[in-house]
Length: 282
Image 1 (tube, rainbow, N blue to C red):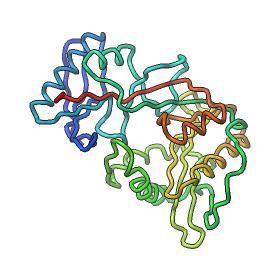
Image 2: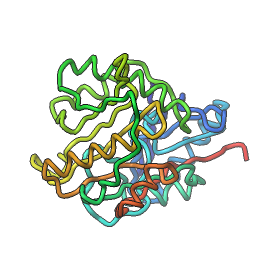
Image 3: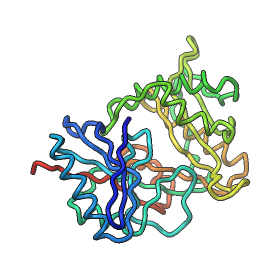
Image 4: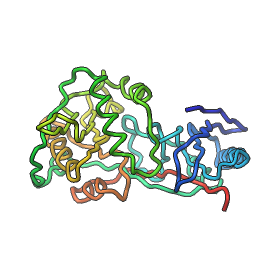
């Protein structure tokens, strides 16, 4: 993944020329965007789009640092609470700059908070042959290699998905290993074979200090319908038992089952985000 710095008066960004497909078309992406005013930001974005058009690319996404494995989305609404750990952040002029440069939302997301007790629902239907347990904290490289293999299958149908190699995946996640609490990381395995069928990754919100009272439900994925519900139930039960006051349902696509489940459990949306896109050949 190659990035190229682009700067102008009052604005800067990185251009990535090999972004994920958008409706079957190749894209470039714009990441690490900063601007001092909407006008200066929009001018740089328009200049980058002109450059991309000259390369024969007709779709641009942003903010996105190359692909969805890295930072992407901008904040469109917020209640002003401080950012949580690993949350994308936006400058005060970013949204206006993208809109002025002809970008519009192509995908929308939310983060919501809920008490652990509210996040616990009725027991989900039994799933014979599945065993849910915590990661024991050992052999982190082997653990995340399994997570990588499952993720590449579970996320393959998602919009804007682009595969990532194991080495690049480990480079993203291994630095967080010292922060991880195995009690908040769950695996679901085939009882007969031991094969990983799903996982859930939670982490304390260290963005608010060393001993936070909030925990983040960051990511979960599975290969079997309904398994995510089991993993989320186990997570909220554990968050309650560990004494956390709040759970953050982080960066959920607003149209997926996780967002619906969060709403049904009283999730209070405190931040909204968008991935912006522009079609250059319209």
